Length: 622
Image (cartoon, rainbow, N blue to C red):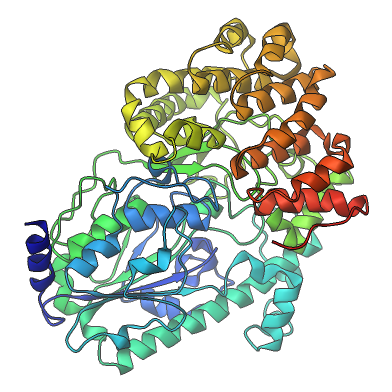
């Protein structure tokens, strides 16, 4: 019976004349403020500006996460990454089989689906197999006659690596960008969130040229559509996968990291599918999680039960809820852990840190491929900076942040402790709590516990769903633990022996957040060194190291041969880095660990650097 139903669904679709083609043009790492049509007076983006003049332009469109693979998993499945367990960058944790990507439904409806060619969906599986075509050569022109298409062209020229010196030279040699920047770096308008350093100015000037190169590629794709005679039947989306690429963009929940452009052109034939005028500017708060249900709605389909977003176009478009807020999230990016959650309504932005002990930079070492980031760090190290330009590098960041992006668009003034905004922050604090509980945010589970709790054949999303009745209480405890309030220390100390490992984790992290003030919990932390889970032992060892207990550094070294997974190694590498104890790892253990098959990319790099600094022999490349 199921096979017959699937066959009928496959045969049911109408021809291309009866369904719109849909073209998605996406770029990488450019926030909305880089484009002329979004008000940047120094931009040169004639093709995108022209597209904006015949499109709906969304001014409050957000990438739910400020990094690509995490955001992409949200787009693909119409589900927040923390609800799937896909919030950690470059992870491949399994997700529930009930979660199907939008491509699945499009193919059921007879659409020819192509992806050229970025995948990186951040969960277990064969990414390319989702599509009819997924390769650099994938193209809608390869479809059958009269077959409607959905096509993505991922344009990568604007990626943050375009500001790496070697890539800059390559792009200049290829003629993608001019050998001399169009704008003199000394004449660049420097956002107030960035220090006025020569390297920063140079990066900004070069990125303007890069965005112009992107704009040219957009123009070529639009011309190709016109010349194929398909423009009148094709709905066009243009958006960026998140913010960036210059300093304090990508990986940040500030608007420089998450407020991205969205232009949607709906041809006359399909105007009945849009509640907006053909040319309009809307401030409606909209986000990546809304794209999948919107796409299905354009095909006349209701969103599946698992999708969490709101269709804003199509036959099943939903009106914007009153007082609508968008959910933002950030967790481990590459090798560095750091959990943050946020909300925005397009004006007010609230951010809550769950690892406030850590600095706000860096969130990944990859960013130091840019001269601007490297120069900024060095200027801080040399004592040349003060205020916000220095504090971003320092430990013990604000637990809460509140910004009025209307009066402070670059989010430089944190209003969280301003009494005039007590009611606003109280409201947003409660809203965020309710949202994290409603979506069963798996960020409350540390990544090294994903596999132990989910089991070999389960998923962390399903584990969380079966325990969601505890999520409100667990989140309350996590917030108390990371509040830096010493009154909670007795509660944290007692919870170090709780039967649930996730509760024990937040108790241990709470002690770590208190730092030296956690000294009365020393005996309980010493006992935690014998916990069955590595993440608990490591967190306790870091706290003991901060408390100058000799057992701390030795316990970290002891964890290296015990690590069972890449997540264990990653968490341990963070511990060594933040305590500065990597020099205490015996050389024999460095060499032995580098031979492990489950070590993973970033721990391998970490240990390789140590080996090279000691002139140790390296094992053959895996």
